[in-house]
Amino acid sequence: ETGVTQSPTHLIKTRGQQVTLRCSSQSGHNTVSWYQQALGQGPQFIFQYYREEENGRGNFPPRFSGLQFPNYSSELNVNALELDDSALYLCASSLGPQGRRGNTIYFGEGSWLTVV
Amino acid sequence: KQEVTQIPAALSVPEGENLVLNCSFTDSAIYNLQWFRQDPGKGLTSLLLIQSSQREQTSGRLNASLDKSSGRSTLYIAASQPGDSATYLCAARPGGSYIPTFGRGTSLIVHP
Image 1 (cartoon, rainbow over the protein chains, first blue to last red):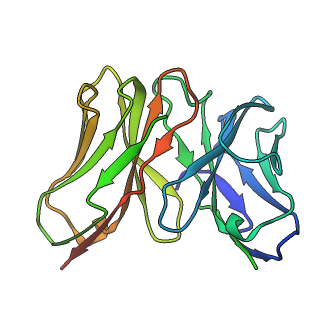
Image 2 (image 1 turned 180 degrees about the vertical axis):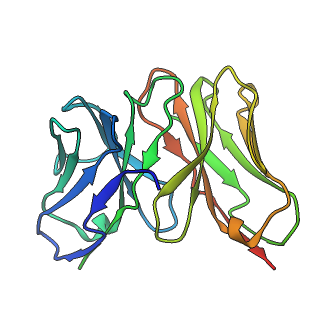
């Protein structure tokens, strides 16, 4: 067990709706990253938060947004949901931005989102 | 743009075999490379992290090697067990970037 917890574990939304996914990082970790993993694919980096500020973003549209709170927990918000947003959303925490040497990433169990 | 390829995509072996999983990356200027295990419908578990200055890392029955010049990493699993059945993913982190690139993974089944 990594100590990274995500909620909810599963949810179903209708196209056009909005969704918020939550993540609590491992104790002592100040960096949270979010990934989208479609079925049969590797995880795709969405963005990273370090000390409450976004400091890296992958190739995702602005309707994917996030927050990091003072306790380093984080939210991922997706607006105007599309069918292709159906995927496993993974949160990962680390001590410091992931570019630093020796930084192992610890993943949560993920949130399964189905858009119908 | 970094691209990561994992071969084979799927592998089924009898218990006890020694295995080699391959990961290749197009940009050799990586910061580190990490191997993960993913059980069906679950998150990723970190197995081994190799820094760019290192050649290999070992943990129990697992050994990962890194050859930056050829853009390759291998994960060696000794004496495979049914409990090793999972998808194994590698992720290459480019130098100076926070954005890791994952491969699609190798789906491993070890049957008794």
